[in-house]
Image (cartoon, rainbow, N blue to C red; front, side, top):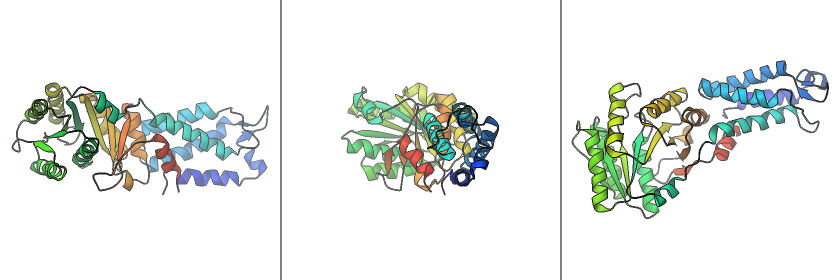
Length: 311
């Protein structure tokens, strides 16, 4: 179900109103203008729809304020229905949230001094390790060489998972024993890349809950030791309101340059994309759309907005 099905059902109802009832929303005085008092009922419906879509509350308030400023007192053409005007304004408000500073990831890698060091952060279970493997697959397809760093040393399973991906992709993995110093693993991977003239270093990191102070301190240490060129947050499209808290916590700790949103194929709502984009003001560069290595596509705000409004 679309994240805005509830709202659009309401708009459909307005389209079917009689001329007299429509006059309650659109004032005919001094031209056809939207009444402020009646607009609030529309914004309330929008808020409910956004909440059902797991959009973070601060993001909802920003979208509502944008619509309020755009629509109150706005003249409405007799050839354009009230609901059409609302939907157009809503699309623009969502676009404003999703469109942040641009980052052409592939161009960045191509133009940057080698090796390019990329640090991936995010909570366990969001698909971070898989996202790293997909990025490696993407870069190899562009003729670039990669090194992976298994810097999530707190979980033996994380090391084994990344090692399996490295074997599948024929990418060198730098690892230490479970329980070792994560920063040391990352440092060794960078030194290996420099010695072997590799193009990109992909650093996996631990992903315990973002409120864990020790984890954040470890993230800061890895950043100090490796001085990454990019820090990428990997978020879960199904995380909903948690996504904004996760992104903000990692951004405050180490500074995020971009985000990858996983499991977008399983998300029928889209709230996480809106929440993450607004929370950190950084671009979503890719989304995961399936289970294969190649299921990583460049994020397009227009595609996301179209998806949001689909039935």
